[in-house]
Length: 336
Ligand SMILES: Cc1cc2nc3c(=O)[nH]c(=O)nc-3n(C[C@H](O)[C@H](O)[C@H](O)COP(=O)(O)O)c2cc1C
Image (cartoon, rainbow, N blue to C red):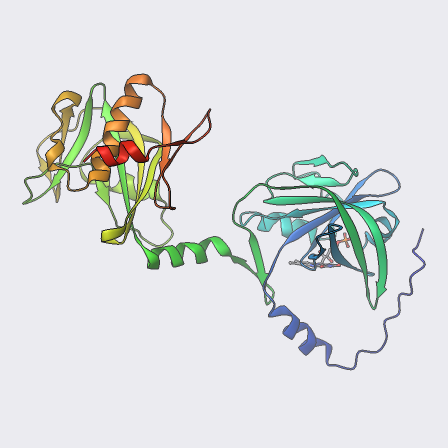
């Protein structure tokens, strides 16, 4: 059934192409708005007109074009859902901006409390009861009261001037300016850990690199370094992230294990060698943070229970995979 809302918009007093271009300069996120129609079928469309309206009561709005295929479904529904898309969900945005009759076949979703579908993998979602439908030119404004929501974190997909933009890349660029990022790894073979030293340097330390090519991941960067040392290792999980303020650096360490002992000898700029846990040259390490981190690694390796160490946000925490974070400040300081 058609909504009792006029479909003829008043004559626009402005050049609509220019108006559209000017509106497009407003950088937004991207959402998929969903509902169930009167046959119980899921319906949805991509929208960047989503806006928060009120905190008390919690209200949000979204504008739907009267020309949308799903206009009747949305105007007739008791509620709607909003899924905020993550930066990798450009294909989802394109799918829901299409006229495909099978939009929900190729995405994972769950029904929310209002029945409206909630897309998996988004960074946040809101379930809303429709409170008002406002006729507004060639669109209808749907105002909804939020009855359930969740913010799951992640980098949002952005949209500006007809293009998708990635906030994640912007963050990366900003971070690179703020602090040089050093990637490193702790890899062991049984009771021995891999250390290396640069040509002309007598001190041994954990393997690190700061070479970051545009578009390469931290794992690729580390793999390149290990290959350069002719070291066969499997990298597994993030182990530690900490700032070294006096150097203006952020250190990111992964852990892993060697699949074979290094061939030995020096290859290129880095020499690799395995050291027994009992014979680590602790005084060689230039940074107390590195010593502290490796001590923890040895302890956790023995217990086969690893955490992720995060430092540099005003406090130090160990995030374990199966327990609440604990403080590691005292231990960190005592490692000196
Ligand atoms: C990034 C982006 C944002 C959009 N925002 C809106 C919007 O806020 N409201 C709207 O009605 N259509 C918007 N659209 C267009 C709809 O997604 C598109 O017309 C879709 O086909 C509607 O689905 P339907 O016709 O199957 O109902 C947007 C499209 C894109 C790509």
